[in-house]
Length: 470
Image (cartoon, rainbow, N blue to C red; front, side):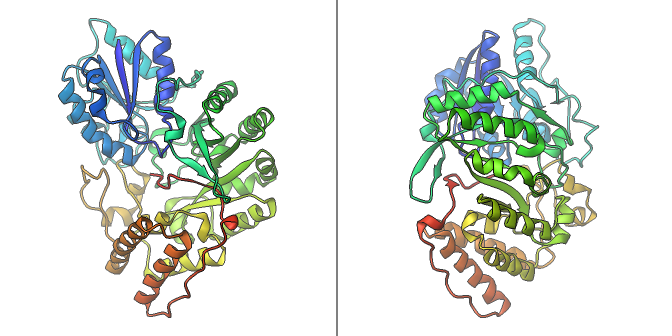
């Protein structure tokens, strides 16, 4: 069969979500074409799409899914007879909408085996009729045992080395920017998938419901090895939490460091795990970890409790100290605007970033990130949330909400525009922070804080040139 796999966006990385299933499908004898629309225009692949027997869209995140909603229409116009599939985290949560657009097969969780088996079934003359394959109502509250069982697959798979042979070259994707101005070609892989934890706002939770799956060590190493051969000088581990399996993680980075001593990497680890496994921080430093991303979300303990984050403000402050003692770079992420935000809490958020000397550690866009409530979110468990949301927005793929204090919503819109404009002017993170802080000071009637002077470049931390993450 002729199969086309399409990724619309994967955080600026060469898409693992195409490379991994491509290996499975090619092993099964299929002719597989991979298209990454973040780097390739669909119009340049119209003949390939028109000739396909099946087209599968990878939907790992919110932005990717919104883009795919339009791409699906383009594909159906080019090839009305192609059988369509959507797989990845956001496929089950938006199943009804996807089916309305003509998607026949929905796959969540561990998708490689199920996708391969479905493609094999299409070869048979009695393949399933259109629309088969389970259901899950858009916007339904979090009920992991209901609705998702037929479309989510959590089998423990024996993985194959991803096949990246027909993807755009790594140099086309996000790079690691170093304090000395050097940029390194960055690759991407996954050592685990899913997550042990049940944070309310996390899109992984409705699909994995506290489960995580390990990608075999030899597969991870082989994938990194082929990317190094293709020019990678840095690797991002895309695991939702690299320390869900801490022994597995450390064995992998130690093996990589022995084989590629100059190779750097980054990983995402929960605050809770950074404290629990603080003894492993020296191993991260010794194996050339450039930075660790950790989802802090807020400095407000009430908000952290509502999000069920599993850490407190004080515990994050402890992590900051541990990282400085270990000589490691921390890259915290935040949801700056939530239904519980006030002007005062936002001012405290900025003051805390300044006091902790973390201004240079976060992309400026994070100063204006607003809580997203997608279909199936555990946030829908909360009475506070159910009271303030509007009907599900089928275009934006989320529930709209308003803060009880309209000033907080107005501030968000103002800062979002301010940051976008400042980025176009190539202002530094510190300069943008100063503008943001002046805006909140003005609204609170406080004296404007002095403009922060840019630090010498050697004082900044490494970062990836793709700042978006949802």
